[in-house]
Image (cartoon, rainbow, N blue to C red):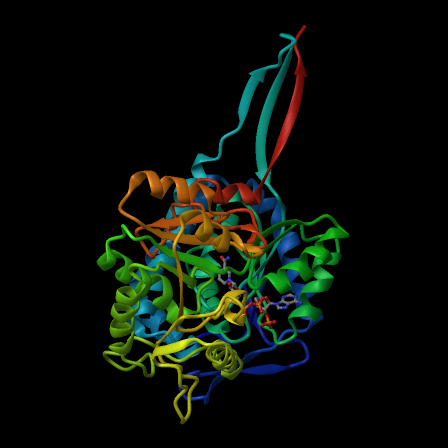
Length: 479
Ligand code: NAP
């Protein structure tokens, strides 16, 4: 912790907030303060924006190979420091060390992927239908970007945006979540070490997100917002972007359905459920929120899932053998407590867990609820905790209707051994991603994103860089 930067990163320099303000970073396992970091105000945000705007022109002209090699070096440094970064992440966010190490590798992979994409941006040339006019197409960076990230994947949500922005030639102001600023600051230090020119990435940590970001979005100099967070905040930011027609990418909330058909392999379904529910203690936008299980296998599935969930070890993420760390903060835990209590009041049975322990830290035990009523609040609220809510169904058409009966559409999971059914159901689910007999879809080489109120655009994959590029069409008549 002693070497971790705690100041703002502006124009390649570490600086305090201009008014000297700082904010605490808490350890969710103990509730104790880990350290203080700079707490930026609007003036600091403007300085960060100035640095990004100033660096944009030269950065856009920098050779793609140079940009690519910076990302590649940063990828290697991140991997060399896996352990150090994992400890930092566990300290500020709570996830068990093994998961934090997994996230470091996942996060680094976005830099490797986009270092490869940076040199593959193509344009086009063609003859138009009249046979005379020619069309030259080139692609250019969209310009200075504001990147806003959540706390649940403190490193990967940063690299998933910074990677394509660097590859495309955009400069950036990054505003991480106030609960987890340290991972982003460590990332900025790594990019500087890897040779990123001053001003290309600027990081402002702040407890005043609205005051800091709104002037940037309305000011006319930021050309792109890439946001990951809740749908509620996403809507507000879209409205702020409307005035100056800022381009947006929105990775928003989810309400993932997890469908287990009567012909599913239950071993695969339970393994898949453990990943789809318990990755990141359930604090993931991709977390399975509603388990729809065919009535002929529901009891067996519930029993097996409860057994596996009940065997998980809950405790501080730094302790050996711990599977489930604390939730992010008291508010996060209070929400889970409330959702479970509401479901139980409406008739749900608790197969395992269901009671928050006494004592310090924001712990909540892995919980399985069955006989959950469709009217329960957790049916249309992201639980964001280790709670699996099981409902039953009898008919394929009916379960698809129920799975789609939500404003969100990020991801869905389908468990069946029938190819016909697998394709038929996946195609009818209103989601951006489907896990077919698997509980994990995230992969830097695949386009991640949702439909409906889960967002706009895609991150990762071949299309991830497109979000940071504009086309320019050059009309050339040939006589
Ligand atoms: P959140 O409350 O929406 O916050 C996300 C980020 O937005 C934080 O940095 C937050 O800072 C900032 N923010 C909040 N209000 C703002 C404003 N008025 N102006 C500018 N920035 C503002 O979400 P969260 O609770 O941190 O994260 C959980 C949510 O993220 C869930 O809904 C989850 O599904 C979603 N998520 C989606 C994806 C995806 O790829 N689709 C991935 C991960 C998470 P403050 O905390 O200071 O307000």
